[in-house]
Image (tube, rainbow, N blue to C red; front, side, top):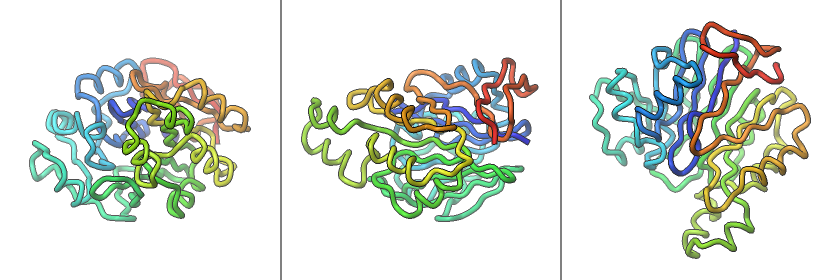
Length: 274
């Protein structure tokens, strides 16, 4: 059974990632409005009825802005760490809030979601891998530096949303104040294009079929620049830039060809199958 994945939104204006099969799905983060999430998913032919849970990486507004409305409207369980919960002001009933622990594996139907702590300037930030059978999808954004856990989980992935937040030269020559530049590149901020590329080159699996370049800075990066950087080294991996203002197509993990599928109202883009 294939996994279907899409970036619904990716960037400092909002983040939301969809991973699911024909029966159930999860969202990682809900950083754009409920209405905009619904609109983008509808354009893809994705149904909110299949979303069974939301997993929250951390409390920054670009990851939780639409969370309360979305969870309440669809009565979705929300998984988040105690530190993240304390740092959020969520108008969500207690019965919908579920604790999330480091390295905990949570089953949502056929999906198994494992959280792991990461370096980022938030209360208790976590990233996730989502597994179904032999296939694994990773969500690796808002990462201050590449640690052993990141490399270990990245090696397992058939597809990954990987942060490529900034180009070093653009950041240092740009308009940001020096303290903010240091925050971004100081080990608790974000991954640069170069750091992400090094992870990709040194630790990708032979099974890595899709890499979504994610959480690009509006001011300190350029989609064509970072796509070109990865394209030169991609091999059999399809490189997709996850945009700030629009969703990506839906890609299939574990399906060998482009297929029309009953889950969608349009053809699913699959690319290389594993």
